[in-house]
Image (cartoon, rainbow, N blue to C red; front, side):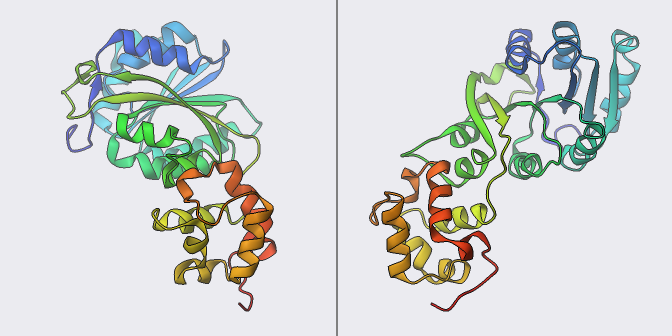
Length: 276
């Protein structure tokens, strides 16, 4: 069952200490851990961070039961919840949002849920103050990339969080041994949400990354979402200082937001179509 769920358990205490240091919540904060597994990181979080409450979300009911029965945790402020983090986190967010309670999120993420988990985090009503995730290194590097290596994942995540690559984690830090190297990534959610239409524009820009920005928006798919004349698009690009020959990889999330605002009301409400 454990392998079917894609779990590789952290066994390196020094890596666990580095993760706890990166999370760095204030004393008495609420900490939420995704996928505690056998509790290696859980022990470090409880010992080093002294949280008011540590909520551990574990999908495997057998592992959850083992955590609950562990004598080391019987007097600890540990609450174990069984479920998928992608559905449990919105519920936790709502609970901690009434009244608003600062919380911090940490976890060793199975590779196959990374994309959907990041989208879940973006949509939380009451987001955590800081997020520290252990991911496949290739994915972590993509999330942290900037111009001229911007990509769909980076542009989507960096719109709602500042990103920092903390360190790489060797395969030997886990058991069973994974096939790839991992990395620790810190996400700090922004106070402002991405503007309406941002993610639709990002999808257009990166649908065919080799195309120029102008052609990405003006092609058939882009025109259905942002029905602007080429002349209007040229004016918007000129207004924000973007060359028509540039590609999306050269744009920061901030620049994409500027372009969105320059395109005007139809871009901010991509469901509204105007005559071309």
